[in-house]
Length: 94
Image (cartoon, rainbow, N blue to C red; front, side):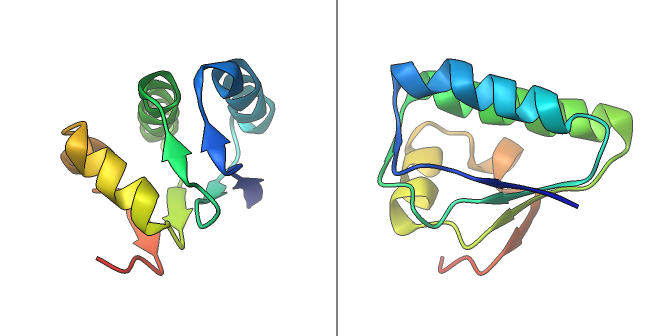
């Protein structure tokens, strides 16, 4: 399983590198560690949603582990909790 640790700040500048990180891991099961996230912007959320869909389309596991409160709350505020948080999440404090 490929591990991807998200940085604290997922702002506009982080979207390109985040997409590239997912592209490098495409085709393998991926575990996204979201415990350090303090800020999640809309564009990075779109990258996460697109990655989740790509992994689902490929039939590969996509899990989110230890999401921070900020990650969970921002995902809910954007209305993406049903699409993103319905994935396999470990260590969520919701």
